Image 1 (cartoon, rainbow, N blue to C red):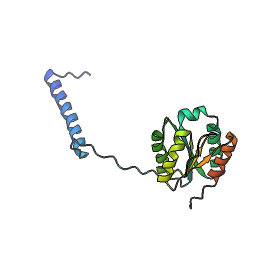
Image 2: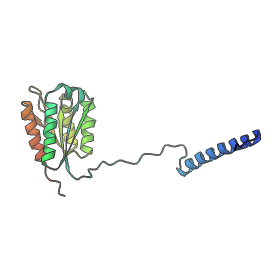
Image 3: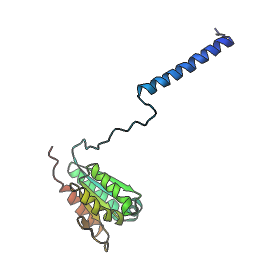
Image 4: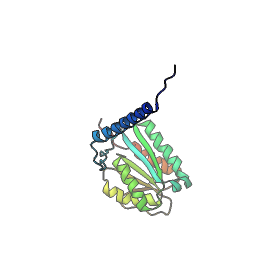
Length: 179
């Protein structure tokens, strides 16, 4: 069976469909209460729903890729997480200067990283300001021999295995959460 619509019926049907779509769009706009102004996004408050301590490894991605200790330190943090209930995360980002690195360190503190391990000169230097602004977060700078230590931040040097061992020990030494 074929339905044949006259030209007038097709025109009325098309107009009805257009009006229905327009009405739905206006209804949605009015239901959202939008008067053309952007509605501010709800504030996001990061939380650690597991309640576990968190150790974070961060640094400039290019610097971390060129170093031999990055993967060994990451493995040490993962080993600490397996031995003790501990969250670990890695954030390697393109940040070659101190000004670029500081927001990442502050962000990790805001995300409740209890221990922030930084790799590379930019993150090492930025960790001084981050540590001053976030006294509840422990900062460790992993430096190469000859790289200056930073006041107020634990600086670790030595062989790759010595660095990894010390990072692992410090991750395991984080106090219990009190749960």
